[in-house]
Image (cartoon, rainbow, N blue to C red):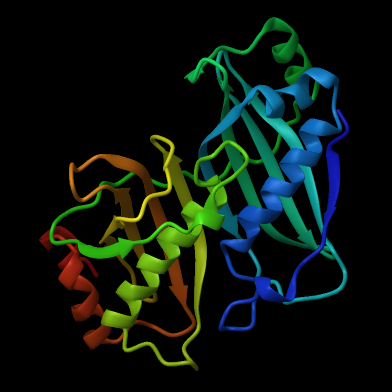
Length: 279
């Protein structure tokens, strides 16, 4: 099977404070490529977007920093898996000849008119199966829960975060987890402009659609692993009023220098004792 190719232009505003394309911007690129992939296939694949399709999860492995260029990124896409009511899309993102990221999106068809999930039709399954290809699987990342004590970040949803379905777009969840992560890092690492921290991996599962409202939601974040120059954060986006959960995530952050004893002690504030004692 020939993979689908999509050339995705970068925007100047996609860069972060460290001068690289921000990790959350990659989700925009994946979405643009995925939409082009579905619309460019058989009509039944394109109709999935019209009748409704929800993203259930993302897995993104960041392999090389990307700086802004007028040269577009090259995305290769394929169907990775097809089930009764779900399918997965695989991606490789190239900056020139450099493989910058690998990713996987799991999605499920949704009946917008009835307001419920549905199964794939036999025709849809056939079209998706025809677009299947194989690739090296992403390395597993354990789904560790948020533990107490957890850092709490009040999250305000913007009106512009909504998509054509009337809910918060799946891409924006990566922004939300990032805002909470930056708050944790600023509070613990004594983060200076010259310090370079890179997201190496980030997975996110969507539990339910998130709606616009004036009252803030909340992102709870805890430290689930501490390494010599890396740490892993578990995050949970929910409603502080009733403890409902809308999404869960894990993020692996790697620094260019080892964590200092003070930084390890500060991060341990949001970690259980089993992590605090790890080397």
